[in-house]
Image (cartoon, rainbow, N blue to C red; front, side, top):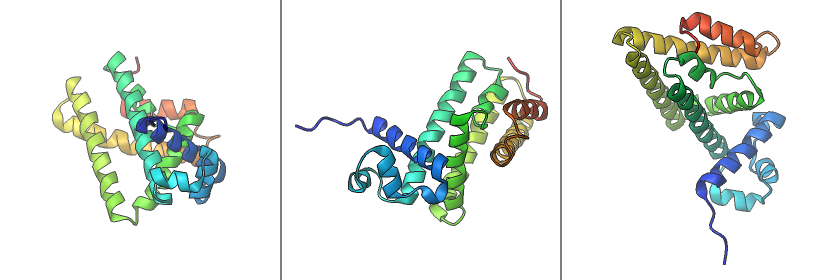
Length: 189
């Protein structure tokens, strides 16, 4: 009798294989064959879980977002005022987060021309802005200021993250942290 497969574990394993291929070979290297090889399976077996190349990157992004949000939520659970620490979970300050940002860039490339993915990304940003503004409101920030600050923090974080991938020697982890903290005006723990 075949063993039961934990779908969440399988999703995370496939996402990890996509990240490894993307890190090593770039977006063009994310093919069903390359990911199957990295995953240690056949292409046919992989297509039972993920039907095509776009779905591979989409799955990797969804798992990545879940992981990033869980880490950010954990920072805020431990230190409710550490907005910068939570946002830092989205900056490419180490190898893992650099790989995660590459997933974001790969997804954005598809989302620009695919209406469904475009809407999904728009909604993802809308939810992130809502959550961030809500956290700021819980800290006593006026509603309109919280909305403006969340827009500013998200745009700044995205800008730093993209710039850091292209100029890592300039956008060192320390510079990313200092810039994010200095722009946001939020205190550290």
